[in-house]
Image 1 (cartoon, rainbow, N blue to C red):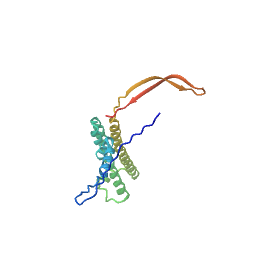
Image 2 (image 1 turned 135 degrees about the vertical axis):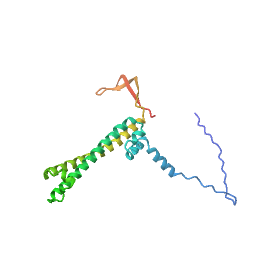
Image 3 (image 1 turned 60 degrees about the horizontal axis):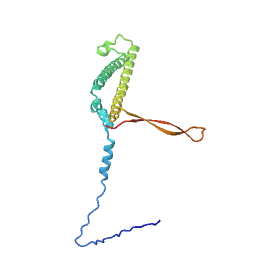
Image 4 (image 1 turned 180 degrees about the horizontal axis):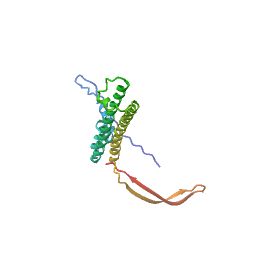
Amino acid sequence: MGLYFTASPASGQVVTEGPDSVIVPLPVADTAKADNTFFLDKWNRPAKAAFYSAVFPGGGQIYNKSYWKLPIIYGTVAVLGYYLIDNNNKYQDFRLAAIQRADSTDKYVSSPIYGINVSRGSQNIRFARDYYRRNRDLTILLSIGFYGLQIAEAYVHAYLKDFDVSEDLSLRVQPGLMRVPHATGYTPGLTLTLYTTSRPK
C-alpha cells in the first residue's frame, strides 16, 4: 500500500503602491438594510391585520377579505354606541336631578330635568342615577372587550390564512424492530407512520 501526495505550485504577486495607484475602499455591510429586512420579515400578514383592526375596527377583516364579518362588527358597534350614549344621557339627567333635589329650594322647580322627576322620591332618583351609571360603565367595558376581540380575530384569521388547512395525509407501513420492555433483544413488528403536512401558500 502506498501513499501518494500531490502538490501544486503556488504563485504570488506583490503590488506596491505607486504614485498613480488608486485605493478602492472595501464595501461595508449595509446594516440599516439588514435591519429593515428583519423588520419587514416580522411585519407579516397577521401583524398587518391586527394593526389595521386596531386603527380602524373592521380594517383587519377588510384586509383578510372577510367582508361578511363587517355587518356583525359594525352592527355590534352601533348597538354598543347607542346604549353607551343613552345610558350616559340618562345618568347625567338623574345626577343633575339628584343635585337639584338636594338643594332643598324651589329654584329648580321649573327645570325640565327636575320637573319630570319632581314626583320621584330622592331615593328613587339616586337609585336611577346609580343604575344608569353602572350600565354606562358596563357598556364601556363591553366596547373595550369587543374592540380587542375583533383585533384578535383578524390576527388569528390572517395567521391561519397563510397555510393550506387541507391536510395532505399519508400513511406509511414498514417493517421494523421494536424493543419490548422486560425482554431481551428486539421483536419484529410493523411501524405505522402518519404524515400530515401543511404547505405555506
